[in-house]
Amino acid sequence: MAPTKVTSRDGVTWKDRIWITNQRGKKERKQVSAPTKRELEDLIERLQDQSRKHKLGVPDAAPPKTATFDQLCELMLERWIQRPASKVSTAAQLRSSREAFGDWDVRGIGYEDVEAWFAALTKMNGEPLAPVSRKNYLKAMSQVLNYGLQRGYLERNPATGIRLPPAHQGTNAADPFESWEEVQRVAESLGRRYEFGRELVLFVSGTGLRFGEWSALEWSHFDLTVPLVRIVQTSVNRVIRPEGKTASSLAPVLLQDVAVQAIRSLAATLPLEFISRQLRHTTIEMTRKHYARWLRQTEMHWLSVANSFTAAGLCDTGSGGTTRPPVPANPV
Image (cartoon, rainbow, N blue to C red; front, side, top):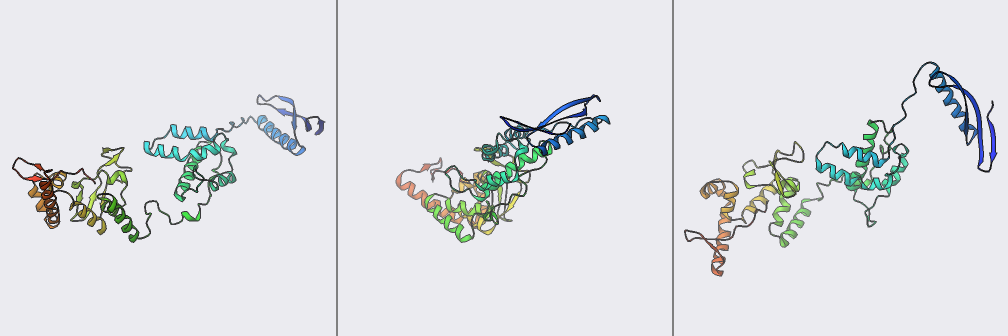
């Protein structure tokens, strides 16, 4: 029977009847239809090819796996074996792509679809996203698509080849300043507003330490004779843990001159007893011996503070009758 054109109130349909061999090896007649003649011919060709395989005893190929983008995201996050913190950040970076493609079959997502979504990325208030944020959003989406690619949910990753905006080139989130002059201006400004603000900005900029790393530092971690600081613990949600963000995070970090000067300036604003206790020295004399070259400023500073406290009647008097100012909390 030749292809026949059938016209009805629903439109035009092309129909035909052909002989095929089914999965059991028996011949049967099958009626097929399609909206156009070309589609009908393609369908007949596929069925005849399948029929020839049935005659040879070749089993049908397994149907392709299907999943929506949301389902693939949930599958990847459910089987996550990396650090819990990275799972949280990845889930947050996937929100935008899930809003756009959540109910899409991943096989239906094309390169142009991803390109259009990436070009239209903005903040919730409509302002443009920072280049690093846009990169992270695309990276998270590509990670999900690669996960599906490796497990047979799609044949290619449509996010591959998407070009990052020109503003991203040369941008480094860990190096937001273009010069040390800018660092100095920010440090001086914060120093006028917050105690230890200047020293903290200079120290962090001179080491590149993460917040969780520098906020967990103790004086005993420093060796200014090298000079270096040993990262042996991190602060996570204000809890000190003997672990780092990565395996290589717990390692000595060499200090630039600006970081050494900042930490010495910071130490000069703290009482000698506090530094000695942080260094776990048994006596203050031990602290004087190791740090005599740069503790004179400390003694002079706190002597003047102690005198002012004595005059105001606000000082703490020890058992030996000596006065000492209140010890501040550890700022490092």
